[in-house]
Amino acid sequence: MPKLHRAAPSHAITRGERAILIDCGEGAMQQLMRAGIDFRRIHKIILTHHHFDHIGSLFTCFGINMMLQRTQPITIYGPVGTRRIVEGLAKACDVPNAIGFGLKGQSFPHPRDFVQVEEITPGDCFAIDDIEISCCENTHYRSEAEFSTDGPISLSLRFNAPDRSIVFTGDTGPCAKVAEFAKGAQLLVGEMMVAERVIAQLQSKNPHMSAERVALMGKHLHEHHLSPEDLGDLAAHAGVDHVVAVHIPLDRINSDSAPEYVNRIAQRFSGTITIADDLDQF
Image (cartoon, rainbow, N blue to C red; front, side, top):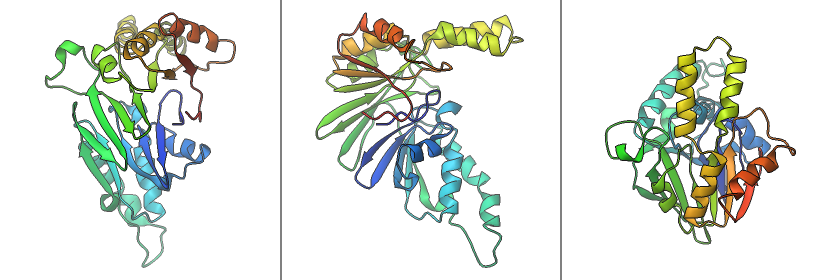
């Protein structure tokens, strides 16, 4: 499962000649190629939620497949709202589709011809090839007390293959439901946020940001994401063998700073810990 983009995570599970892409953040198509995965092998895309850093390359995915005359279907799974996003992007393809390569008599297939949408909700379970996929709501948007009420939903995903189970938290804050959902998995791919440093970076790069906006961003980063300690707690409660930390929107985690985060996770979790880097495979 290669980690394809640090700040906008996308991940791929390959199975024979086909691959599943999990989230489609900006740069995902280029990173797939760097990981040695032909984007034409992608036949399923699963979106955990609709923040732009997780859907930013969908338009590129549609356009480049259109230009290369794709006819094989791509199914996009995601929370309610996914269909509206796909319909909007498909409409945005109308102009380039009509232009084509500017050659008389030549035409492109339209994404409407090869893109399908399946909206999923917490508790849903579906199969892709021999992998059973289930999902649960997490706390990236709201607290567990608000689950099952109207509002946007962020999902965590579990992949049960014949020989292993992998849980991908997506973006989430601390969440007992996700810890229960992940029990018995061998690998937990979990987001990690170092909120204090991210806030400091935001203030440094945006010195005119108001104190109110900084406070709101701080609330989101602290409550709707996992600190290293939170990730360690989640992995320990789930009883997984191996936790891989992803997302990590810092300028760069290097060989000097990575042990700090491993140690913070290890305060709560005694299994194998990896701080993922772009293109890593597990």
